[in-house]
Length: 479
Image 1: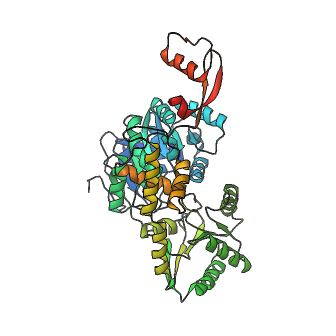
Image 2: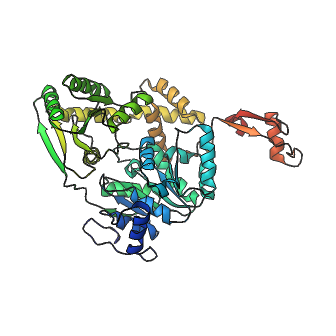
Image 3: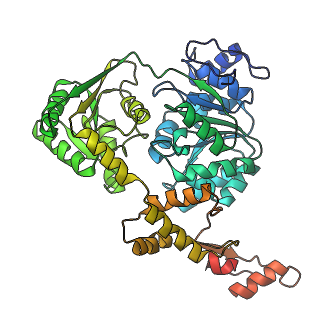
């Protein structure tokens, strides 16, 4: 393990070239109003400011966001934060102090086209110091080219366990980051997560293409009280869940495996007089937003959810977490239970177990595995569309549809993205930047049609003349 690895109990070393501890604390007070760092924050920030690529493993509620927000204000150029959820971006953005807020922005699918164009222009012009974006955005070459012009000093991969194929929240588009980061110049890299085994940390380093020096804080949080209750069957678990939710004061989250179970348990709690709602990925986006907002503002006291209700939560006063269904992994359990007691006050984490849960967990695991026949169907469809040794446009939605028909199974969007990532990982295909379905082309009035071969070719293909414009399909235009 590199000598820069620290734990909560290890003294912070000052790195040559980094601001002194007293300078960092002065900036912390000036920008954020805090006199002291918490836990491992100073160790992480000291490494980043010294230009050391870092992976920081810090428990939920340990203040991971400050580890890049403060450096972003002190480093030259722009800090880019890759964040997996719109809700998480917005929550962190809205909670920034005024001076930092004014120099921060975000880019995601919630923006209309005009706002997006205006904001991207401001980013590329260097107006902002801190920019949040989704990993999918970095698959768009114009955005990456613009960031390169804006001089990126630091790239932050938030929720970095999403990079790892071992991870419980694996996100295929995170695997593209290792290709993009070199295109941004030579930025410092900071990966942040609440849980990562040594194997997962190695996987994150490998995928990002950097040797990351670890800062590992203890996951122990003395305000959390963990309990495991073994009950005879599901019915007894339901009765016990009602007791916990009625007897505990304050907000709570109940995690269940299936969408149907979430709805069933929320209805049962409402009948028992508990203000409860359900949340899962099958709800319309507007409904999910309404349910989450109701919970965050304490109009709903208990929310029953799948792990789709996860990383976007930043509610400090959650007093209890109940796992009605067992989590997939120990890392997943630490992530999910760690959303209780972020305000430092006592909170309960209750795991309800019945004899059938072990068998169910094995069955669920088998169901979620990528089937070999599905992988073959997706590969055949890609191979049919892309000539061997050459590049071609391939629409993932069309691949999904054709592969589903060929395999005769329920292949979905996530399956296709994971399969494409696996095929790329073993060298069978290479996925490049995403291309838009269509592009808008406008020729200026003084366009030189005779002297420029590219312009002449465009006018021939599009039929445009000087001063004219139009929208065209990307693929045939590229051909």
